[in-house]
Length: 251
Length: 300
Image (cartoon, rainbow over all chains, first blue to last red; front, side, top):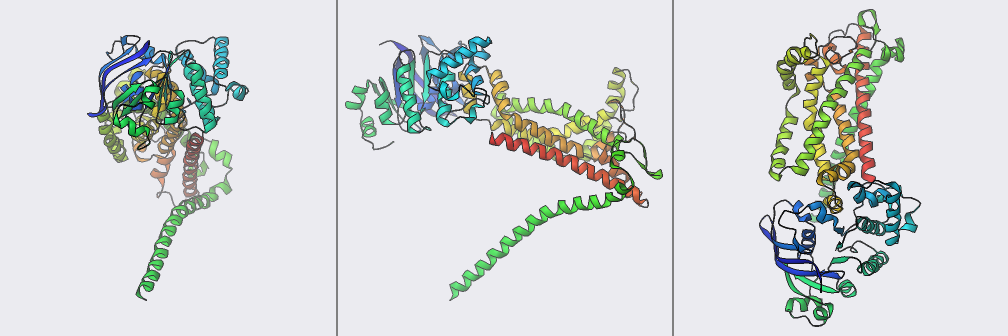
């Protein structure tokens, strides 16, 4: 299996409080890797360390390495803008930028200097169609993005992330604030998109993990307890903590 | 039986304490109304004798021969207020952005009490500082630099002092406003490949913009009404100022300097009341507009 990202011995602490403890794992290319675990186990922090959003946390300290296509992105020689543009982020709740729908999609392109109107318009249509939002918003592209429903906003955020042409999609419980129908739409999109993108999906929903995963990483209290294919991990868990989580003893 | 009496007693106490709050509330609402009503009543005398248009747009101020043109005062007030905002607004905005986005946490922790202390300095101290530092600076350095021989008591001195006074007031609001922009919004922008500065410019400031504008509005209404510090450095000459080095005579200074002296002339008394009324209405307008913008921003 080809690995897009490999993490070796990643440790992260905030104000000397350890959040991630010696995390090592591989994220295979063009697959959906699900990071599973109860709330507060460090899933989100791990996800954000992949595109160095953890740099924003005051009092953070990191060690270890994160190899993106074989290059360590933690050693400080990398251009952050470059790294981040390779990864589209989908957060727990949609956070549309304070501008209209059209500008939300073109934001990533405009800030990197693409200003050709025809090009931008084509991109907007293409990516809005990709997330099944085009028909709902094509007549009101100039409306503020905050006027959309939460489900529509989350699809807009996905389209916005895809529009900068990332190689990886980082999704942090992307369906946790959505209704069942919108959740289903997002899940279906991910299954379609994995042929072109490497997807990292953080979730605490066991059934979602079963539906989506090609590779599963189970985390507990900042440590990776177990990782493997869904078959290995769900049907034949080795570690007692994994077993009790899978049997629903804690969430 | 005893506990029933107790219950009754508690009920009564409850009603009593609630009514206190209602009284406090109505006093708070009632006093400004009485104030405005009083101002209107007192200024009616002048309004009956003179046309409002003439009062507002005439520059002829000779109270003893009953010419009351408020234009010099209104223009002075506007000059000083707008100029002080032009000086303080960029300083405040950049400071707030630095403190919330770039500075280390301990810097902001130290700055909070510092700003509060600045906000609490009595305005007469700012006035004295203006006379001792700003006025000579304008007279000896800034004036000659522009080829002018000036006393230093000027619109510019007033605006300088005023801008220093409203900075802590606006800065506090701006810091809170910018801090309130969700982190996730910044993360979204950054993960789309925006630089930190682009994120601040296009997302953080954009998101906080209605609030920023309204905090400037509230700062302006404070500046417009500020009396003593401005009065001390502005020169108090009744003439429409045509440049920032010229002295002016803002509305609050007019009232503070003259009220109580010329009460034997009823029209003069009434004119000062009208000045107070104008002041009140302008400040009220700034405030209402600013609040409206905040409200609009929150529902957006």
